[in-house]
Length: 303
Image (cartoon, rainbow, N blue to C red; front, top):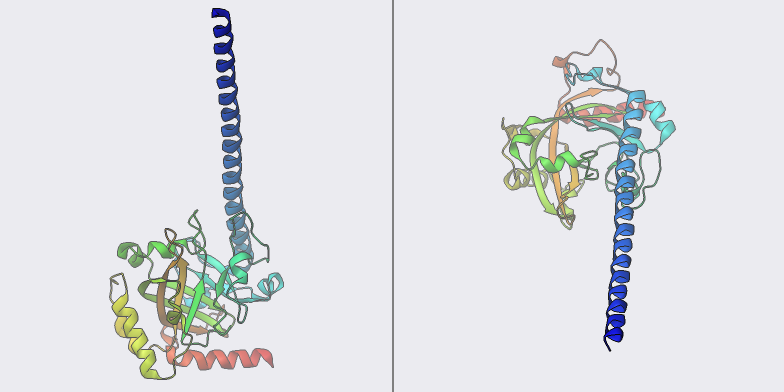
């Protein structure tokens, strides 16, 4: 009798031992798979950012110390960028930050560059670096009243992740200047508001308004609903602003919400002055004249 009981006990222990060995090996496989996936994601992030840095080193001239004293000194090799991707419409640069990227645009399509980088490579396994893009609802020459640029909120802080940090007024006020370089000329933009809105809030990205009064009401709304306190307060310049730029990224914690940093034009340099020694800061073009000059430059380029 005792022998039978001992045999049964040994069998039970053997079964339990077998069960825990199976659990161990399954856990090990899951662990190795998780480490491999994380390694792949980090490698993809590194590869994506490294590719953009390599493109920047070949095509854009910006000060190494980030101190821009003359807007005309920011030079972009548009021909080289077009050879990489003909959808190029701008370059966005923010001194002292990681933001230094080409901007792509597909008319009527705001999805393609969520999944494809500037070199047209497609991401996978949740590691989609994408490209900074101008909304497909906007005109590619930035002639709209409201121009929205989108960028992913990458977990390594690249692309437009910084704009989510602008919800903190202190961080927002550290980076009030954004440079948007285009084939028509260079813009120096000054930020004035940050909005936190659900992704269903499509009206905030309306390109143009039927009347000046409605556009003015929109600008007033941006100031009233902003979640930051600008220092210095530059909202008094909005009254004469005819063009706004929004830099949009997802919340990160909740992808159904968006952070959008808005800026207006502080200075515009026509492309004919870019890279030359003839431009001085005191000859800056007023915002209201920028569209006309840009249109003339585009017409000359096409003829």
